[in-house]
Image (cartoon, rainbow, N blue to C red; front, side, top):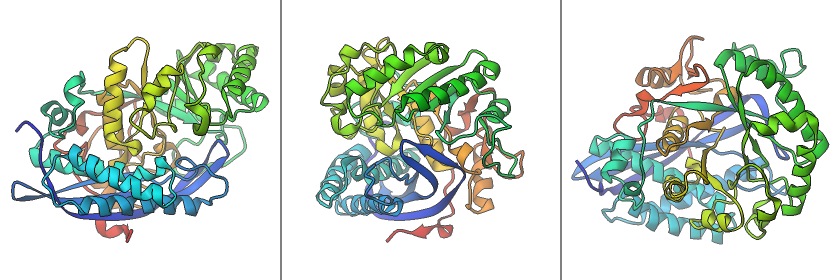
Length: 453
């Protein structure tokens, strides 16, 4: 089967499941210890046949909307509102359309409604992004095609797949995030869950053979210098020929403050070796001004890429005109946004960067779909840390976790008696994800989830 798969959407169900972190995660001004994960179940009709598709994403507070005036629960409710609006928009169209055509029609309608109700654009697009993944999953299952084969066949009906040199990756390198509250060494005081999993940077390197790392910045030069120098000491001793990326998480108010910070950082002997191993700097400037100021004059020696600013299709092109050199791929921002940006990056592969980010992807649908999305676009190392902050499938039924592990051998490890992401020599084995549908042959246990009405 080739060409676009046209579907008629019959039902959309929204769910959530509570997630408790085994370790606190701090980025920017936020510390996260718990939050819900959203699930979408789509029932569609293709050629008179009923088919299902599914997706999942963590509802992370203080990323989609970083307003200090909002509580974490208010952030969660923003994302539930985005999901409801996306569901209503998708169900309002009885038309037989390709997945991309559904995304265009329903996504634009839902985003407009969410914006009118006060949601910031990044949060407004969360719901459409989840529904787009679930509809794509249903279409690929109906066609009997895997993610990569489906894109090559044009099954989603998007205009970008045909322009890409898609890869069918066997493995991708994991980039381990080091949060601002993370314990670095085994003798450092702090949380140490008795669950058999690593709780420090040192222990994670030993267990997983890590060589790539993502380091969070606070934007405070003295604190960051001290933190980075301690991290460098661990990496120099244990991580071999390692590489790092830096994440500003919008901690700089403007280009001038970023320039001053980088000058101080580059002149500090403790940071010099680490900066020589740095591959990129991610979204250092607050989104409200990031696309209003040029960073070209800063002449930073590493590519600076956009992340939180990525809430419109023209963001990458606008950023390139201001001195940025790339953008992140995240399924929570939309699969079609990633495909669109990948086409532009592929036009200048020696200069531009498409990175793979999102530490929040949880075991099951979320981590499988997001990882394969980025790796199929040529991303060779990807931020993947849900396994570090959450104990496997968390409170999901054991039967659900075992079903995913059995369906995707190599991607999960059951050595501790319960499935966890399998990381060997710092890499993830993706071979079991090349199955009909979007990176998964099984579904969550729907009756174990709480409905979002």
